[in-house]
Image (cartoon, rainbow over all chains, first blue to last red; front, top):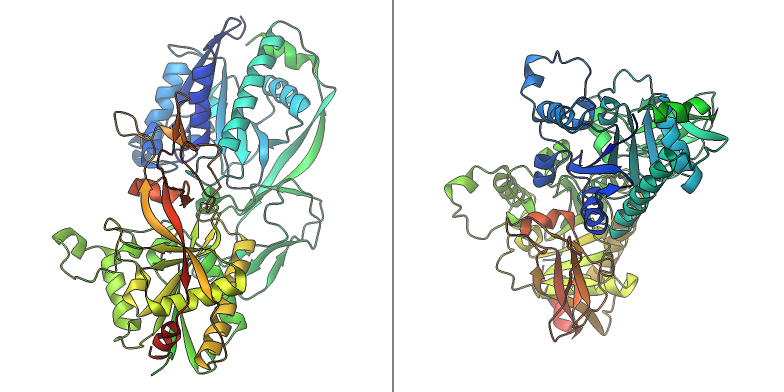
Length: 301
Length: 301
């Protein structure tokens, strides 16, 4: 078997509106069927989109849990039932089975256009390598973070997040929309070539591997009492070392990075992560050699 | 009588967080008393700030109505009671009477640093002229819009809004904070000089006078079906003429400006105005000659 149907999800977070418009425009200009691959475009969280908020009861992009033993509360969450619906409909065993899911997101952080992967699945590496090779996109590899699980693309055998910023929540930005259009279009071309064995992977790919997250400084009441430091804001993907400033609190005190390892912070100041008590996430840099197995596994999708 | 106490309000909208931080930093660096003028710094909507949203029940910056005959619902609104509290406390007849109110706001629109005035009060012109003279700031004169009333500064004898953008809601941006610090600091200096008769007004000031607002294109269900056109987004304060593009809908149809007058759009794509069905507001440009009465009225504050 090979790839036959691909799911493109926009608006998994209801206030990330530019991908939704990219998909609308894309649908107008392109056929949903290309080279024998059918594309399904869907709004992840239509109710939250309607209301202009990230989610109704819980973050949809943390609601795709493997175990269905939710507690009493979660059972009634809109996003839990929505996640189940999406899997029942478009999951690999669903009524319209998709082998790949691409989930389109925006961020208020200055991340540029980037790829987010969850864990080290060979098929995902395959797609990520092609996009990095074509556009030089940075890759954030999210793994081993027990406090954050249940991401949408993990519920499919293969999948990536495309994350573009900086853009304000609910703000239409044609430049961001255009970037999504270019990525979706190229991804379709690359997947098509891959399917026809017309492509060679780059020798290696560079990933930024998630190491953990840090919260803002807080006062004794637990309220945020610190800005991202002026030298740190908007400098996602830039390396920092011991002693580099991270935060500035309301008393003018500077909080510095005090680890011994070089790190590359991402999602610096992302608005939606305040409630998760994340001011930025730390990554380190790793070079991974491409393997033939990546393509072989992709062909077995 | 002359100016004795000035109210500086930040966080009238709870998700506009940079002014709050500007005020915190300012409080640390400056005395609240300067040249005989006492400064009161306050968070307009502390509950909304805590929750990271614009407001709880209603827009606080539309809740300062002259008539207190609210309907049954409004009576229980948090923002109505908060508006009453602020006026009872800091209003001209309050327990700590302030003669001037300066209300600090941010916008997701690309407005730069600007001044918003409500109506043509001489004392407001006086302050606005000084700031425009010093920094060249554009002035948005909001008047004669019956659908939008109850602005905070209207409840004080003299007052301006300082509006800075573009910045995402809830996103800390040290550059935006710095701009507020500069404006607050200069405003204090200018008011001090004005009080001591050490200042001369510029010959005239240029204002952009509110003419009305336009909504996004909508589909038959009433849902937004159009982006701000790529040629229009982020071009606040730039003149447009008949035939210039305003919106692009999901079918690729361009909506054009079809008025005969030149206009200068502002608050283009402001996220918070979607619920008010405002995609942008139209202004025209007017030059107003300074009058001695402006300063005289200021001195009678």
